[in-house]
Length: 274
Image 1 (tube, one colour):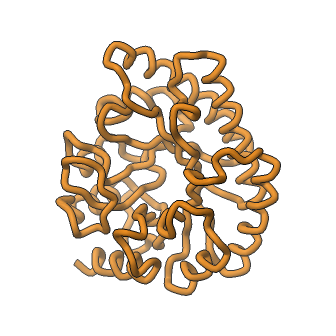
Image 2 (cartoon, one colour; image 1 turned 120 degrees about the horizontal axis):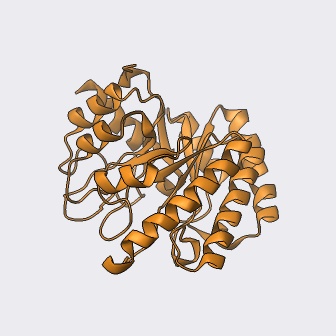
């Protein structure tokens, strides 16, 4: 069923405040400036914390979010070779799935997240390993979806640039094929060989969440929408046609949005007014 961009709430990934751990004060700034959803980005010093310690820290964030009317929509699982779901080392791959499953359960209990975003691989991926890595990441994602589903969280695998897995529509369709519970996180500045709106139309209602930012079609940039070459009317129309109901989640760093939450909300208002 077609939806309307006018109904989507505005969100921002916590990387809006830099790579440090997000603070309660920064969360309050989001809520006070019209940003009502947040993605918690783990690509920071939290990455190596034991799950038990994370759970305690996240409980404070979850309680504060409820008190200010902010929804912690998603957890962005850390990425890197140590976190690679496509690893050809079976012991390592299964250990990564187990840790990610534990992170998702802890985030659900502490912050009541709805989605979790995962990268299908790190990079560079040698061409002669690509097929086997696609098979491995599908095994990982199936197991991760089963674990996340038990606690009421949907896994969303993100499209990625360069040599990473999931760098084209065709490959993403292969990755998600047959894994019914698996969603997709559409990052609007990662596809380097095709248009984002075409990706959205091909994946349809698989798109469970988004990362909104702009780029020059040469490499990922994470600019505020409007600075780069994306056709935002085409992208938003494709999301509407796909029945997208999640938040308009921005993933931009402070260097490209120095106004912080105010800049995110202003950018979104400008996009929908256009």
